[in-house]
Amino acid sequence: MALVHDVPLADLFLHVYVWIDDALLDGTLVIPPRPGPVPTCSDAELLTIALVRHLLARPSESGFLAEVRRDWSSSFPSLPHQSEVNRRLRWLWGAFEQLRQHLLETLPFDGWQQIDTSAVPVKHTSRVRGPDSWVGPGNMGARFGWDAAHHEWFYGFRLAIRTDLESRLVRSWGIVPAAVDERAVADDLVVGAILDGLLLDAGFRSKPWAEQYRKHGIQVVFTPTRTERQHLSAAARRPVAVLRNRIETTFGEITEQLGLVRHQARSFAGLLTRSGATLLAHTLLRLNLVQFT
Image 1 (tube, rainbow, N blue to C red):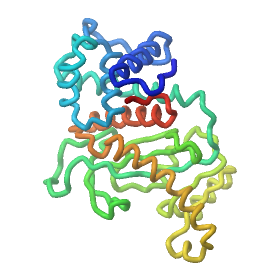
Image 2 (image 1 turned 180 degrees about the vertical axis):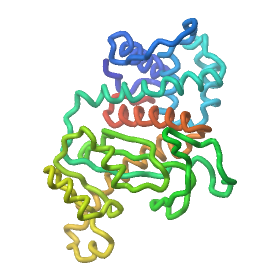
Image 3 (image 1 turned 30 degrees about the vertical axis):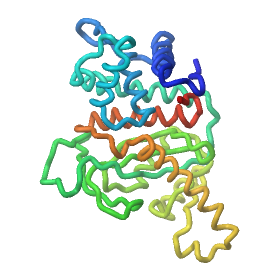
Image 4 (image 1 turned 180 degrees about the horizontal axis):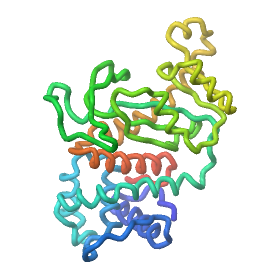
């Protein structure tokens, strides 16, 4: 099922719900069974509410749930308390990525890819007072890192993505430490991918590292440094900038327009859930599968 174009907001819930429910029925989306009684508010309903919130870039989960209770009670008559919604969505976070990957499976793969990371703060630097509860898998904790895009220090993690150069679709992603070797991140994100080349910024620059990829038939191209750009002709500088800015545009859509940088999560599990929902929303919008008025 394809989501229709230009649907009124009143119909957005319906289209998203039907898409998710159909995916559950046909086996595209698989959710492991849980012990205990079947909840009156279904997984499809909760996933619908979460995805619509991220499509609308609503920053407050509690505020959006209150809006759903007030304006959409006929569609979601058994919406549980926010604490239960949070708990169940954290358990369901992988469903967003299953749905996203299903969308990507049918699309042509761009052999040229871009990889980069972007800061995802979890706490203002002035409020950091030592160890806290921001700990993810493998004991990966929130740390200080340098946000080159905004020329400032931040406390949190990074969102790492690998995208098609042409379509800018996110093919692979992960939450990684704030201070990390970006080349190691790239190595993880390309596992299993068949590539022709990578376009990377200067932060990845390493001739020995790039040579390892070239030995496997993958061309690695680094965008020129500021000094190198001064020696490029004016005709060459613009195409280079346009290609490099593609991934910056993608990060802007994910972090600013869809609001991931304002995620309001209180735990790593919450951040992971919000990231998965945001990236699914971004993929739907990039594919022009859903618009609303």
